[in-house]
Image (cartoon, rainbow, N blue to C red; front, side, top):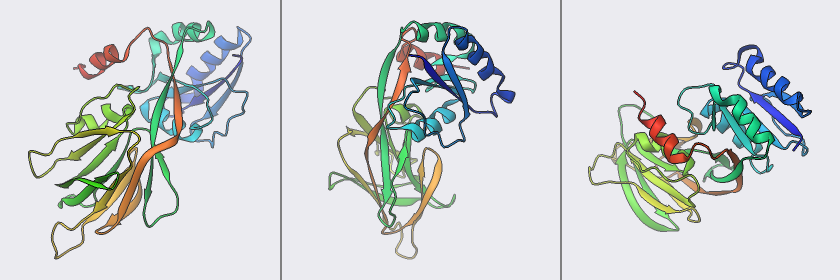
Length: 273
């Protein structure tokens, strides 16, 4: 390993001060380092051995989608707040760099989602989740959820989340869904604020194909929905529209240092006061 790419969220690393410190530290050990902005296209050179992402979970998600399939492992350095996807907290930065340079790390492959609306042509990737949710604050929507062409359930709710194991600690968790171990080959389907109290999350195989159709809550009007991939609105949908969700062919390679396990991180992050 000789080539690093530092990908920086410059809103969190003003003047690239942290990036420049890391660059200097790595170059002292004769590593080649390139610095890019997370807003760049990020078609990285095949010689790049690892991408160090400086920012928060949102930055890691943006970068992961841009380089998915390039087989470049990502090590996140947390300059944000919660930081589930960022492996390294800032006080441990030099320790983490030493571990990487000495080869004391592993690569964890994370599944991501591919979503497409029936009326559209392009698929979109999501690291955390795809949400079919209500467009207007005042109205619920009705959605039918199909798994491998079999009706799983119908929800009258604020919407429905399909999350990866990586995204199970994000909106899915806030909506009452379960936390999945990040190495699981599974997806979790969670209704958002369902009208019926007996509606619960369902964990399905990552090999399943999920179809979500926007129905009609009342015959007198069309249900209006927005489809979000990792929080970004990509499509608008209304009664009759269908969204297809499946595991993407690409995967994201995340660097794990192993000194802080997932469950320890989960206890630390979720028990903060």
